[in-house]
Image (cartoon, rainbow, N blue to C red; front, side):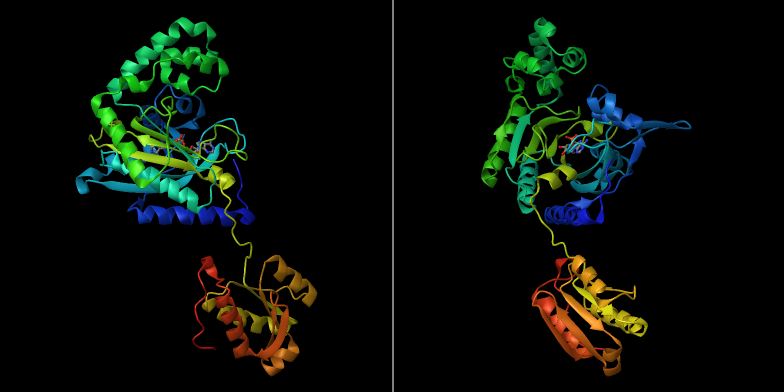
Length: 427
Ligand code: HAM
């Protein structure tokens, strides 16, 4: 689990903001569900024989309740959708979420026990059009947050019937080769043979190389759905690779499955940025209505490793440096007036030397420094130092405020990178 210190938070916030914007442009609204859910929900939704449920959940008992820190967001969103009877209120729901998830995995770069996801779910749209829209949206978002080398992989798992037929065929193919499989895969042959396709073990990969593919078992409807997805992605001009061996670690998926990877030097091979897919039967399986759904989640820490986005390091744009006790009160007023115009501003109240105050202004990345000593107070003037233009001018207080605001507007620096507001009146 990680601390995110203030030096790093700027990049987090920038990504979160870009994501919220992308979501709102696509008609999604935010949902917030609890971090803790009944353990049974995850067992039913994700599947008893998945790695997540078998090995990775932080589960605990509290009196009579069996509870788990959420390892992902889909199960909770589905539970909330059912519990609040949302399908009776609207035929299509587009929800997004963000927040911490918990999995007791072996920590490594880009893999943590508490990590953050940016996710979304669409309930009530059965066709492949929204699957394609989702993938296209993600590729656009990843470009916007400057993730290089984005690659999309898609597959279709078909419906439950296809899965069943394929599971049997795969079992038949692998059973004579069981001696050559890794210990994990030998166990999975009985419980969840599809997961063997996903194994990183070279011995397992050798055995599945010539295995039948899922695509040979797709029904006509499944195939039409998958063809539709590909057609729509082509229409959007979104490049993708069909990977018939793509399976994912969660059991609820049907039909469309996708993963997005970025350039990998910093992340290590096999590290997926985004995973998602369709889960048309999950709501019904959880006791809800038969509503088709599709969604995805991106690992925020991984996006931050992959993203080349830089955010300006400046903490404030103006720094007010009072010299002497009497000037501190006046400095507080000057800073308050600047902030009213959207200027990020800090006052040094330590009562230290000008040299030490200038050092602090520099550390904060402040462009403007307003210096106020006893002499300035007496004449109602301020020394305005522009650290970028390397100038220092002494001017009346009202003019000083105007100069600072104007220069920062011209440089378009201000709270949230919004330009500061023009100065209308001076006090
Ligand atoms: P997932 O593939 O388990 O899918 O996780 C999605 C993403 O979360 C991964 O691609 C990865 O970027 C990130 N992630 C997962 N585990 C960790 C970890 N231990 N540390 C850091 N990042 C991690 C889901 O969670 C599904 N709920 C996605 C979904 C939504 N499918 C349909 N709707």
